[in-house]
Length: 216
Image 1 (cartoon, helix red, strand yellow):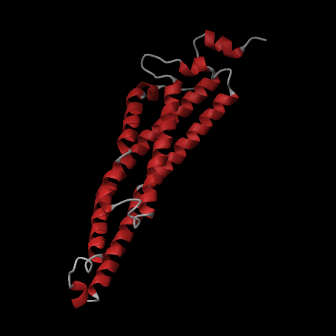
Image 2: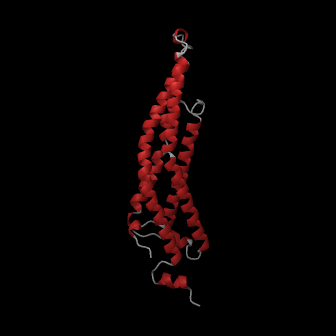
């Protein structure tokens, strides 16, 4: 019996498992480039909201400590301080809910990337003869090797997951100044975003010709 895989390779054609993996990666990259548009839009909105949240937290701290600094407001108007704290806390809660909604695309895409990675690994294990190290590391002048593109999936999955859960942790522990202080919140919020955007930019630039391929 002739080896079908070898025969197709000698003809310079990809085997069916290779085509299946390329199609799978192509579909994921298309999804990533579509999802990143929403993530960028949400990121712009979240920066504004988190700056507003930090301001509210500072206001709440000032109002809560008004009697500590020797002011007489709490003495002269005993009901003002509690009402201000209630109003500010309500605004803080609204900001927290909005920010949790704004970071949701990160969680969703992390799940998409995780599934894409698992499905790719399943293909590689199932068709290990075709999807061997030589095949996976072979590149073209205008198309990166499959290993590079698989690494994109891995890095994006980890980055989106880490950013989402780090931000969620900050939001759920916003009253604990030992975890996050209001004057550090804005900086902490955005510290990992540049790395994510850089990997997506690399993916977009290097996969341009790969996305034009038609895998039958």
